[in-house]
Amino acid sequence: MRFTRSFVILAAALAAYSASASAQTKALSLDDAQTMAQAAADTCHAAGLKVTVVIVDSLAKPKFILREDFKGPSTFETAQLKAYTAMLFSRPSGQNLPAGGLGHYTPTVTPGVTRSRGGVPVIVGGITIGAIGVAGAHQGDHDEICALAGLAKVADKLGAKTFSLQPPVVGGSTEE
Image 1: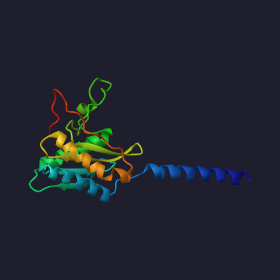
Image 2 (image 1 turned 180 degrees about the vertical axis):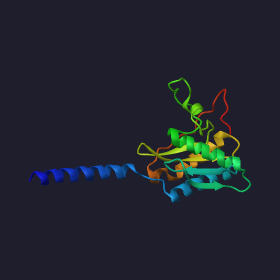
Image 3 (image 1 turned 120 degrees about the vertical axis):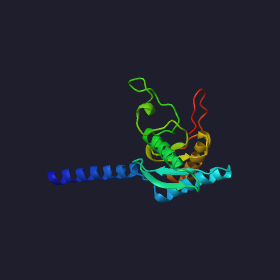
Image 4 (image 1 turned 135 degrees about the vertical axis):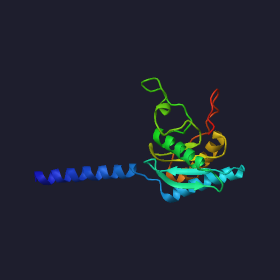
């Protein structure tokens, strides 16, 4: 009898854990990544701009890459850095972060991150499941506008947090 009761309690606990884990393990699908990239590129096209878009997954690894004709290799590297930064810090790239223990802003001491605008995280249920990075529009705020449009295209479907365009930085550069 005692064994049966313990087994039932264990089974109930495992079922509850499994249900909560599956709710927390939302992944960014390839279809959603492609939709985001195309929406970002289309937004830039409407402004007469050609860009490179990189979507990264929850491990900050490229999930989808859209590089328009005649865009150089630096736009891929920059878009990937922007997406990586947004994924790593769960906030748009280019935002100042709180000072760390040594008084340094975390992005200045973390390898592989950028302070350039144009990276936006995909946050679902408080968990960052990916990010979009856009580069090549020649100004960070234009890259950011296109990245925000990419996120907006899938935000309702995913239940993702949305962001607003950041105000311009005074006294500093956020251009790529």
